[in-house]
Length: 277
Image: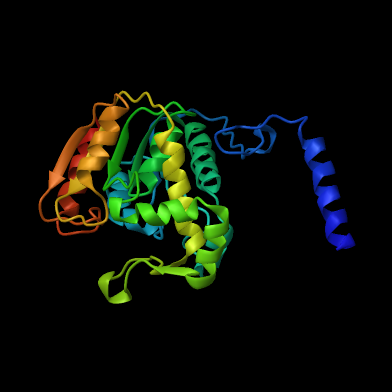
C-alpha cells in the first residue's frame, strides 16, 4: 500500500513539472516532443497521406500504392498504433489520441518534403483524416467506406463502455470482440479478434469527431452498396450537418473493403483522377 501511495505521489510530482511545457489539446502530446522531419532539398509538388482502417494495416492500400508509384507521386502510409503487429495485445492500452498522433506525425513528415498534401483514408481512418484537417493544411480529403459513428444497434454497448464501473464489469465477461472470421478475409493483413479496449477507443474517437468542426474545400466520399459495416445514410447526414459538401461516389458491387473488392480497379482509377487534378 505504501509503495503504491508513493508511486502516486511521484507521478503527481512529475505531472507538475510537465505543466511548463506546451500541450496540444487535440492529441494530448507535448508540442516539444512531437516527431520532426526536415529535408533541406527542393520539395515535391504533391504528396499523399494514406490512413488505414480499424484492425487492418497499410497493406489494404496495395493497389492504390502501385498506382501512385506508377505516376511518381510520393506517399506516406503509416501503421497506426497497435495494428499490424504479431498480436493485437498492444491494443489493450491504446487511446484515440495515439492514432491522431500517428497521423499528425506522418503529415508533418510528408509536408516537409511536399508543398501540398492530400489524404486518402479508409473506414476508421476517415475519422482520423477529418480530425487531421483541424490541425493541418490538407488540400484534398478522400475517404472510402467512412466509419464515422457506431451503428444504431451498437449504441447500448457504447453507453456501457462510457460508464467506468459497467465498463470494467463488461471487460471481465467479454475481454475480446470477434470482428470477423479468417475465412471471410481472403488475404488481408487484419486482426479478426481484438481486445474490447480497442473498440472503446474506436468509439471514443467517434465522440471526439462528433464534437469537432471542420473546414474542408475538397471532400470526396466513396461508398460500396454492399457495405454492411457502416450506415451510409447516417454518414452522409453527419457530413452534411457539419456544413461539408461531399462529392459521393457509389460502387454497386463493392462491400466495406472497397479498395480490395471487385471494383477496386475502378475505385483506384477514380481516386487517382481526383488526386491528379
